[in-house]
Image (cartoon, rainbow, N blue to C red):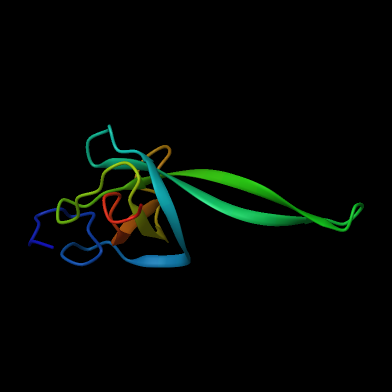
Length: 101
C-alpha cells in the first residue's frame, strides 16, 4: 500500500467505517475508483429444509492506495453513502487472482 490523497480512503482520508464487513470476489474493476464485488452466501429454505446458494453484487469504492483486478478476493466494509450506488469501500486485498489457482 502506498500513501494516497483520496479523501474517501478509510486509512489516509476522513472516511469512517460502520456496519457490516464482507469478503468477496471482484467481478469487474473497469470503472475508475470503483469495483463490483460478488458476495456468495447460503440461505435456508424452511419448506424443504435445505440450503440454497445466493449471490449479491455490491458496488464498492476503491481507494487510490489499493489496486484490484478481476478475480481478487477482497474485504469490503460498509460506510456512508458515497454515490447513488456505492455505500461500501474496499479495505484490503486478501488474495490476488494470480495466487489462486
